Image (cartoon, rainbow over all chains, first blue to last red; front, side, top):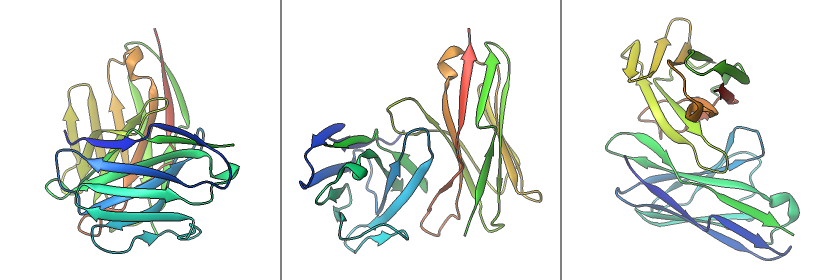
Length: 115
Length: 113
C-alpha cells in the first residue's frame, strides 16, 4: 500500500520556540494532504486541509498564524507550530490522499512535547 | 456537517471470538466509509473500506457491511487474535469532494488470549 512518512517522530521543545513537522508521501503524488491532532484516548481532529501550491484551509478554531502549513510539492507538506506552548503538546498526524485510489493514507504521527 | 457515531467505545472479547463495531452517519451524501486500526503511539492504518455502491466487502477475517437506508455501517472481525487489539476508527466522507474524513470516536478492542 501507499506509504506516508513523518519526521520527526518525537520532539521536545521549550515554550516560545517553533517546531516544524514534515509529512511525505513516499510512493505516490498527493495533491491533498491533511493535518490532524489527537489527544490521549480521543479521536482524530482535523486541523487543516493542504492543497499543493495553494493556501491551506483551516478548520474552525484552528489558528492559522500559529499552525503554519506549507505544501510546496506533491510529496511534501510541513506543519510549523509557532511560539509553542505546553497546551500545544499533542500527537500530530498527517495523511495524504492518493488520487489513484481516492484513499487517505496516514503517517506514523509526531509526538510534540512543549516544556 | 457530517456526524459519525461509533459504538461501543470499548470491547473485550476472548481470542477466537468475533468482534463487531458499529457506526452511524448523518449525511446521506456520504459515499465512502473506511476503517482504520491504530496501535499505541502509531498513526492509523487503513484496514478496509467500502463505497456506497456495495453492501458488503470482505478481506480474510475482516468484513464491512453498509446499510445506506439506515445510514449505518459495521466492522466484523472473526477469529480474533491478540494482535487485533488496538483502537479502531470508522470514518465517512463524500468522494470527489476533497475526501475530507469525519471520524467516529473510536473503539478500543481488547482480545484476551
